[in-house]
Amino acid sequence: MAARVNGLGWATRPLLRVVQTWCLDGRRWVRALRRNPVRVVFPSGQVVERKPGPGKQPRRAAAEASPSEQRPKQPLQVSPSQTPCTWEESGLRYDKALPGDRRLSVMTIVKSRPFREKQGKILLEGRRLIADALKAGAVPKVFFFSRLEYIKELPIDKLKGVSLIKVKFEDIKDWSDLVTPQGIMGIFAKPDHVKMTYPETQLRHLLPLLLICDNLRDPGNLGTILRSATGAGCSKVLLTKGCVDAWEPKVLRAAMGAHFQVPIVNNLDWETLPNYLPTDTRVYVADNCGLYAQAQRSDKASDHGWVCERRLSKLHKYEEEDDDLEPGASRAWLPELEVQSYDLDWTEAPAAVVIGGETHGVSLESLQLAESTGGKRLLIPVVPGVDSLNSAMAASILLFEGKRQLRVRAEHSSRDRSYH
Image 1 (cartoon, rainbow, N blue to C red):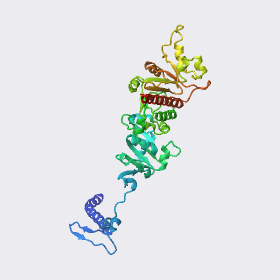
Image 2 (image 1 turned 120 degrees about the vertical axis):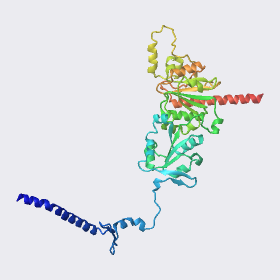
Image 3 (image 1 turned 180 degrees about the horizontal axis):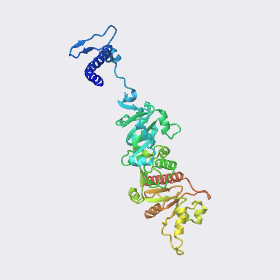
Image 4 (image 1 turned 180 degrees about the vertical axis):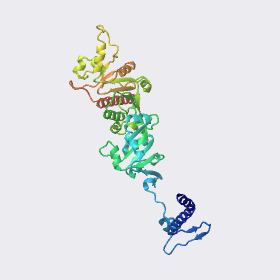
């Protein structure tokens, strides 16, 4: 019985396969008919075209007939922030910065001294300062501004090839250190004093008078000193290593454009500094609170208040090192400089005045340079008990005194020529 059943099973299997295939093919045809095909291809190879019923449209045709094809084509609209805007009068183009624009990230590091030294770029803020820089020949790289009018105030011929980026005023406020930002900031290549073009009026009034800044570390003082040097007619300003960077933003603000009116040589060491001095220049040291004042203090100088009362740790160090000297032996580390009042004549030859920082005074190297050039130490009398003058004030007094002496000498020479 089992054999017959098995035999029947084996015999009926081909029939079952045929029935299953027919059922599957039937279901497929039903699904195909429900899909409303465009054409039907039968197994025999016959192709039958089918037309859609009224109100119906093939899916493919409906997909291809998109609304954009049904309507007249419009020109592609591009956001103004994605394409440069044109300043019609000049033909220059500028960009409108988008949120997250990578070009704005440079403003977070451009104020740092490592960036200025490695990249050789500086940051200038304000229309007047930027205009002075362009006039002097400084090379701009990028301008960030909040209103197009600020760019229009600048010389157009100086803006060719410069990246102009319009930003929100809130961005300018975030970047600026000013209470009332002026709405424009520029990144420039660090100026080279040799390639700069200084104002003609400034060049006509230059004097054989130089300024050497030694260990000046206060930005406000240095900026004020640069303004005084420009006003007095200094031919050059030299900054030694240890001074604050002359292109630091606070120095730039305090100097009020003096950077682009007088040559400034930054970051010099004492070995190379004499190369920047004219021939036969005498170096005079203004140090009313430094090493020399303490070591060479005299009763007369103290009575007139020519020296400050503060004793420096650096002086004590040298004194301790020289405690083993025999009585009467000279201190070789301290150059012997003649002391002279600041209002006596010291401009008979080209002169360079050394101004030291308020904390440490002038360096030993400056005293040695003064001794080697036949210079002296200039003292400004102050009331006894007063610690010292501000460095910027002392520099201003000495520079304008030198200017006065040179003017008086020029008047005497002119008068003598007229007599002959």
